[in-house]
Image (cartoon, rainbow, N blue to C red; front, side, top):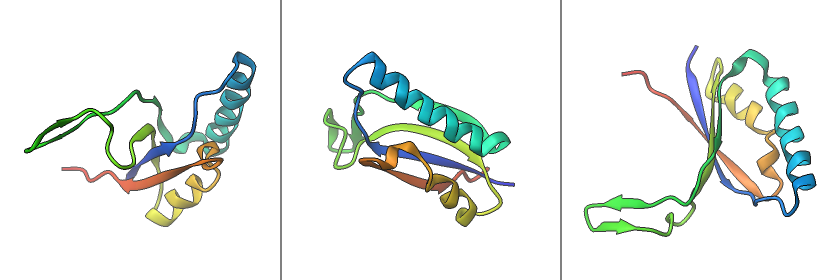
Length: 102
């Protein structure tokens, strides 16, 4: 069964420790719902840089990644269905891509 990366875009840092705890509970419940399909729960990421032949841009690009998770699913459709319950969807989005084994 293939693995898929969920690349998160958007979202925001909670304003208070209490709000942060509520968000962590949402993410924990979502991971529990997916069970063994979660290969790597991942993490949020900091400011990204874009490296190209033209140089390095420090602004993260047009739609910077805010975190990631790796899941195992039978198909792209199954992975996308899992992503539909992601807490980031309250203001952000999830990009789903199959990880191609080389």
